[in-house]
Amino acid sequence: MKKILLAITAIMTVSFSSFAQTMNTLSHKEQKDGFTLLFDGTTTNGWHTYLNTTSVGWYVNNGALQVDTLAAKHGDLVTNKEYTNFELRLDWKIPVGGNSGVIFSVHEDTAYSATYLTGMEMQVLDDIKAEDNKKANHLAGSLYDMIAPSHPAKPAGEWNSIVIRKVNGHITLFLNGKQVVETQIGSPEWNEALQNSKFKNWKGFAQYPTGRIALQFHGAAVAFRNIRIKEL
Image (cartoon, rainbow, N blue to C red):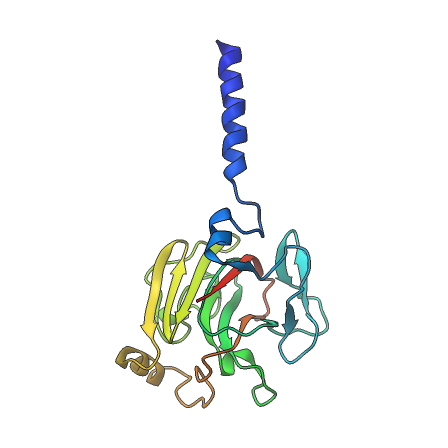
């Protein structure tokens, strides 16, 4: 009987492991649904540092895109390709006290010195010990400085999974499987949030329907993995 139970356990282990998704790959369903990988797990192909031609200040570490805090130069990492309507999925991990973000609809132009001057940001943060944790709409999962998240992120050092969905100006943000923000660009709610934010007089902010996706450098050794996207 003991041998039979061991054999059944072995079969179950093989069966369950065969369904586990390998890091930085697409699941069978994602392939059928039309998702593509934005990060191959080994190189920075498909990305470059904002207003640069190469991925300065970023490297691949244990299957994750990570900031090299010791690099002489840094900058936000942006996709080579631009997107209009999309669903973006990825995992992020932030060290204790760390701050970063995923910025989307970024218009790359020398007229704008930084990605956040045009792009909207889903905040990445250590909510407990980061300096920028004083306002609810600055916490992890927020539409930064505009709309606070309805659910908290996992602590520093743990992986968080997010989804950013943007369709014709309708923005929905998910954090660890829960919807945390929903808004429509140009709606009364949006306009009120914009007027109460630091972006209210920024001429380029959220003005470009098509743009790049950026992973923000904000001083911390943030890491990103399982980055995939579907154009809608």
